[in-house]
Image (tube, rainbow, N blue to C red; front, top):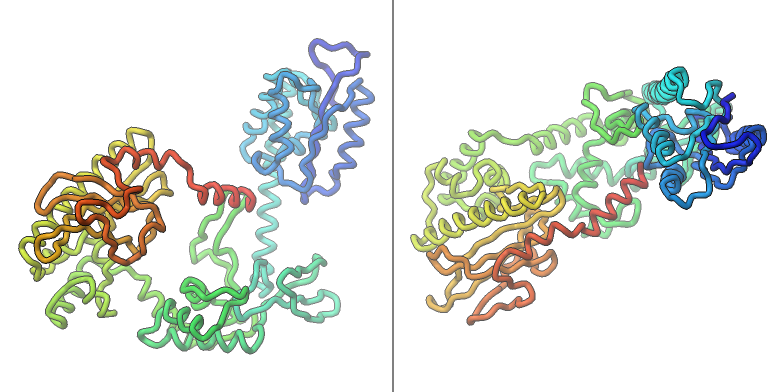
Length: 529
């Protein structure tokens, strides 16, 4: 049992102490009541009076951020007006099972540096700063961390074994499938509802086809996609036009369709461990060869033949063409259509996509040079576009330098003319010369990109064949209709005075503000962890 040696105290005076309680699901025998009783007995025997209570109930000891009571305890320790000078903890493992043993030592040292002693009431070593005590604490911390690692390994192996035997390892079933509870004693089977789970440890859950309506719709999705010209977007649009909704009553989206089409569960294969998040290390993708797969684990919904056909088509669409393949595809389009532009590329499904061409070459004009195609543009328009492009690159370079000098992480994507700042803010750059009404009245138009998401459109105005920027317009998301051409400036005045700027100083201030979406995303991620 630890002793109560603390500097500056008398053996008969009651000392004020706080107690820290933690219970996790792996050690139910260390219940809060059991810990409180042990701490109370130690306090009576060593003249302590507990004046503050901190409890993390049902929480893992792996990380600091998941334990609000410990966070509050350390905050109170730093408060000079605190009511205690000692923290009583049941044992080292209740303080935490941190995978880095130095982290547990650091939090204890932070208390000691603030004048608060940490006592482990159930440990055999004395509460002093002797070398033997330090060695024992380090050993206990390492043992606590190793216990978590060993438990994680055993749980994972058990889940893998259940998956290999064809049992469901957790998570909601896909559309067209349902969970079936199998009683370990009687063998009876009954379906589980949306928020129903097994309560007996030895019971098992398997996957089976759901209602005939859902399974027939899944088969129809596979049949549609197996035809040459159908895509995930096509299927989602078709289902929504029919008034059909998914299991949650929401409209279908392309990613929902593609997720269904790629799931091996529809051919009766149980797949487990595609992602991993062991010991709170964050989710990571597991290599395909390490997945746990059990074929014919349950009744299939679709035939294996059509499933293989769909997978081959999806793999072909996911494959990125090489530079030579893109060039060859562009040349075929020129031979067939006699011209080469964005509209023509989008019309031929076998042709490289506009996005692939721009990602590979940076612009369509560079691709034209590679193919040897001369675009049928007026000489003046071609010259204007060259100037616009050159000034866009200059604006991008100056803005990048200014952002980086202010400590931001910024990069420029040439194929989309987009600045990405601090991995969350996307800014589209556009420098344009005017169009002409009746050949002599200038006006400027802007187009919000509809092929990829951006947060701001920075629109710079120049005169025809001139290299001097007149002004800028900073359009936030939602201010312009995506994909449509909007008149920005005509008859000597802007149509958007609230967004007009003489320079880009206000643009540099935008990254200083954290977006609400980022805060919400961080909060939700913390709650999930």
